[in-house]
Image (cartoon, rainbow, N blue to C red; front, side):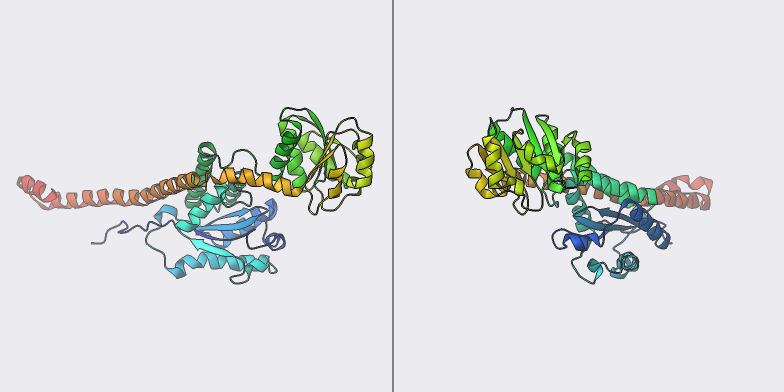
Length: 400
């Protein structure tokens, strides 16, 4: 007699992962495999129609693109999949990507791409979501990006039981890490380093006027951190006016045109430069004239790459220069503090991954137990039907 329930359950989660990130792939290569909101939805819909038996979530940020796959039958999955069976969905994914992104270099065989499966793939997602795999250790933005990736897949119908519960568990683990450790506390980015450097130079409670030059990622991070402190009367300026306008909307800052910047050097307390080139307005002659016209000292923070300010301006009376090396040391101290919490964070992730795995395995076993009771009831009915009324005691003995 064949049993209608599985005889064995494989403990490794049926999840596969392929991706690229900032460690091996530069920004240009990552961009070739990135997805915007619209084309991600179209890609997920196309994958669902071609591979209806496979779940897919795509996590795409400025630093990584990752594809998480799982069989659509979720907990009904049983036994250890053969290499050929588990590789078919991945092969289908790669085939679709090569058709849609024929020039993406990361799709070349074994080129920059990492690929794993089972518990390693699941733990990788937990680590990514908690900020342990971020370019900036403890990055808190990644958890919201993971949540949006799950929401996009659910909307497209490619995230069902296995990946939905996996991603929800990773997000729960991330919340525990943020709550119970110092991995994500404070700020280890350039913006936080600038705020702390200003506090060191001018005092932690001083009300100051600040001018931020630039509108790239670093300048925006700095402006955001300055605005959050509530201590600064903030002005932003960039060569492209529309970029400065956008930064002002986000931070509530005033906008100054690029032609106004030199005049502001005599009025503000702090100038923070974070552009991609040397600035004449931060040269020795200009700063000497500005310092002579000022009544208070000027703090210049150079966060640009390459350096925006002439390093000799630090020798001008009334001008203090904080360079990128000093900012890097400040970031290093903040990162060292975060690194102390890695072991506790990893222990939390281990526990949460085990919790998810136990729930998944229980979901696999529950239908089997139900079927076992159904089969036992059927056998009992057959036995009772095959004996006479006077043999009840014998039937009871047989059933027990």
